[in-house]
Amino acid sequence: MAVQTVPETTGRWMPRPDAVLLVALASLIVVVSVLPMARLIFEALAPSGSGRVDVVTRVLSSAATWRAAGNSVWLSLGATALAVALGGGFALLAGLTDLRGKPALVFCFMLPLMIPPQITALSWIHLFGPSSALLGTLGLAPPPGTPNPLYSRGGIILLMGIEQSALVFLALRAGLRAIPRELVEAAQAAGAGRWRVLMTIVLPLAAPSLIAGTALAFVASVGNFGIPALLGIPAGISVLPTLIYQRLAGFGPAVLSDVAVLSILVGLIAFAGVLLQGWLLGLRDFRTVGAPARTLDYRLGRWRPAVEAACWLTIVIIVVVPLAALVTTSLVRVYGAPLDAATVTLANYAHVLLVHDATSRAFRNSLMLAGTAAAVLICVAVPLGYFIVWRRNRMLRVLNLLAELPYALPGVVLAIATILVFIRPVPFLNVTAYGTVWIILIAYLARFLSLALRPVVAGFHTLDPALEEAARMCGAGLIHRLRTVIVPMAAPVAAAGGILVFLTSFNELTVSILLWSSGAETLGVVVYSLEESGGTVLAAAVSVIAVAAILAIMLGASLLARRLPPGVLPWQA
Image (cartoon, rainbow, N blue to C red):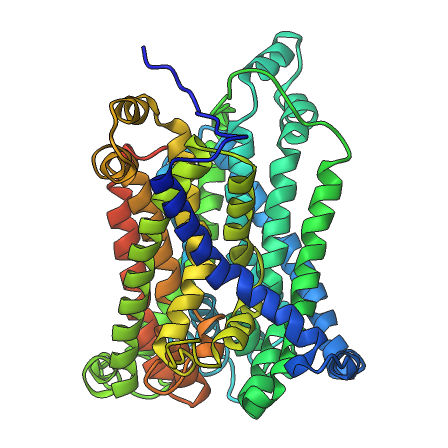
């Protein structure tokens, strides 16, 4: 029987090939992650190396700054509360009860997280208001001049809450699966009913996961750009990410010091949520002993059909109906017209695929950026995960935290930091990445390294290192071990990480909206630009194509699920 062991290298250095590879990996993380963050802090405190702090004073004394900061906090809190209610409820039903069709239900519930926020906003915008093609087709459109209710604080909270509910769902479901079955069975043997077991054992033990999911939802809401931009800017509601975008779009690099201060303020608000999470988790000890329950299967009895109907009705409301509105809008000749035999057309799709240069270029750029980022990060994640799990020491734990940093911070913070580092030519090469598609790729490598690394690290924790140890004892070098042992063993989880990177970066907006330039457009930027410039039906067509691509990739990745550890693909039931 194979024995799970983890070699420990604390207190001694690694062989030279291992050390060279580790230094190369660390250098990459420093260049794309640590250096931009350090440069951001330096620019905020000492703009252009002057050592002056008047920029900080000017930005922090502006009423617009604190108005945007207040909106960021309160809208994020409202969205987080909705996410906890929606995601927590679904997690309890999926993790505790005998609902039928859980895989399909979980897959559909995860879609709002996989679909980019700007497309989510567009689909809901097209669902309501007098110009809704879907409502017009059904004869339910409100009178002309009726304001769209989504252009409001409530609309922003609603959509961000729906999007982030999947994060709460994932975290809480993982916590429910880790509850020891022995505790539940002991309580039931003592005569405790299901409700008492839920309130006194299940929920208290799942509290750390719920707190973590809540913090994730808050941080993601603070850094959200697509939804507040499309819903908030028309309504005059600014948040810090949209304020940064408007300042940078209006004044260019001349205000880099100002937006650096604003970016740090965004990061501090997000970090406050993380600190609150740590404080809440430190209030008590949540450790338990026993085998994880994986599923508790509370039987719903005669209530099961009604509960299942309510779950699927929720999916229809938050996923199917908005996407139907998006598809309907993409099929009409003129925005606001009902869909009928006289107005239906596929010309919008033909235009964005064959005629509109920016759209076709954006498809190529996004495919190249997403594919390259996924490929590079797979190549980085496998050896880095190997070192972190099987060759662990204190330095590697620090390196793991540094790799997680760019994903933990709002994307707008990373974008500004990347601009500050790469706006000048690279030393000794006399070339600059600023104003090219390559600066977006650099930011993607930093932003999504965590997405590629997490499945690999989880996979290495479940793999048996005996084969690698045997190859090392026989004198095989690191490159040979990587090629013949480590990479084949980690290939399925590495592929899953690459799929997550591709899905997330293919339609990304928050980072690329600040980094794109003419010729370097991405799909997310084109969708946002078309909507802002009045090309609503074209934006809807691009969005439908993007959603179809996301669905195809998710369904294809689901075919790998049997070869992957549980939870590697977030939509696995």
